[in-house]
Length: 256
Image (cartoon, rainbow, N blue to C red; front, top):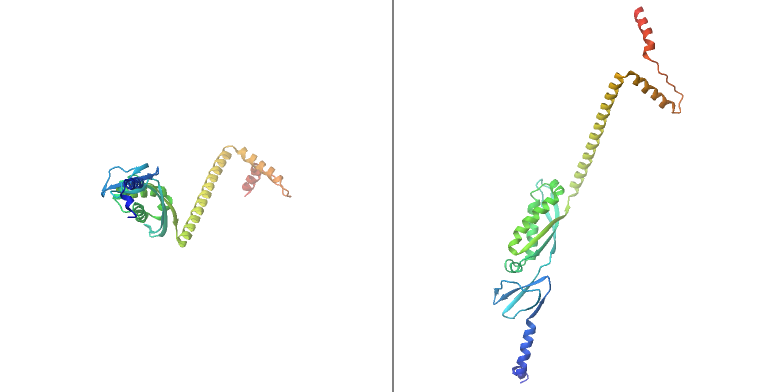
């Protein structure tokens, strides 16, 4: 028989060594092996390093413990104020319990992705567009909390959720641009009105001061003449005190 040597002592030793080598598995530092013995789950995952898996009695499923960065595709969302937008996000998660990640869900990666998409549409559909644009950090925390709550039974920990991009319709962009321009004009008018009000207050204070000190009016008048004289013009102004004209005015009044 051509294969008779297999049943010889040397052949049996060779088969035993070959089987032992096939049972040796090496797991990396970030990998764990979920072991099933006769179909029953062992309580503790194996790894990292060198482990033995006795096939066919035992089967191993490798699980990576590294953080997965999942890019959620753009989702059509109708906000609370009936604005249709497209929103995409990025999710950071990892398996923290390999046994649950294998036994509690068929594919924890796909399940987490689908849960993220539905939660993104559900949560963002309950807020208005202004809140979505202004309170993104708050919404990120809410999304992370909800998704993590659903994935916890699967042994998956969601560490962060970030809304990455909000795609607005073109007509909504034009409307928001007009609104922003109107807000800027409003602030400019308010600032101008406040400046006029402050200027009027200062003029009233100056008028009261000049009323209490008449000589200040004359000094101000002379200062104005000095400023006018510095210009290249042919106009010269001379101050005439009203007191000089008072006798003439009274005489005219008495004759009348």
